[in-house]
Image (cartoon, one colour):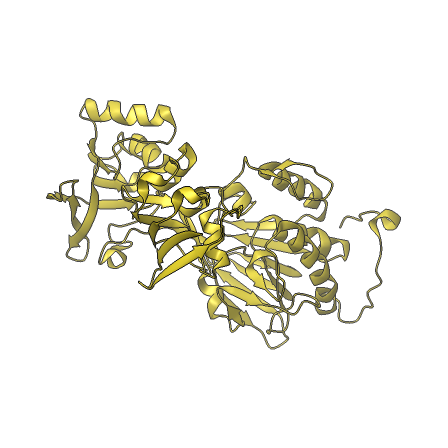
Length: 106
Length: 336
């Protein structure tokens, strides 16, 4: 199981348990758990609706690619802990990740 | 004020709105399209023009902008008219059941049918979280540069790190008396040429470049006078300015459509899948903006919805005529 702690836009915290071997990114996973992320671009790192702040587990994440960094540059609320959930592939390596969602909802 | 009379007023010039012109045209209905963006194509042109799309029937792969261009070619024969860079504000229903849609530029479109193909809504500037920002909108704060001459010999602060922040900093450095660019990061990932030019302008003293910083508050007395900038060590600096231009891209919002009495669920308009009609007679919603059991936000689903919508729209445009279904392979495409 992969464990991810998620704080939504209202401050509610939930511990998610996700089976390994699911071929999804974190944005798609959160949508599957019925988080109402808008995800305008569908996962191309172009809209930043799935903007999140990483509270724990930053070092276990894959490095952000150029497009994600360009898009984060357009967010007024981006910080050094910002990532786009759509660019984080679900894997055992990110077990223990803790994030706060600060992007746009549906 | 511009007054346009047409059969169908389509709100949204994305792929589904454009294809609705084709389906309406086959049934001899004329269309006028309104879109808040200055170009047609909706999300495809605004967000991902160079991305490949793999699920358009007949095209194993097509670049998003090429699809938009192809749709424009396909509908040209039906001579649609456009109001671009205009936001739909109000909808009025007349006694005869027809509609008048008004835009923020005072364009009035009088039509028998309204089709909302607004995607995820109206693209609006993304606003930074600064207390009191909205009370200075139009009084020193604006989110786009409409008329650069407004800033001649004035003091400006721009904030943002994307291409538009870089491009306007470069352009306005020749117009304003002082330009300050505030950016959260310490590098720019936009066009390398623009980033280099901005660093050169800063080095030569033509602009102030304040990196690893953001604006935390703004002040003024009726008009903007000062911004407070916080640096990476939380140090705060006040800077006098005449204008603040936050440039953080665009994000879709449902906007005034939410006030039109339509049934809305999670920012999407509920429709009847028989013909994608809404709860308001004569108003249809197609594409990503609608919702129904089993809805998939796919361009190809929006095309299907446009075809069915047109069949029902016909009875509002030609109430005395009987519609007989015709294949383009038999009858071709008859222009107006």
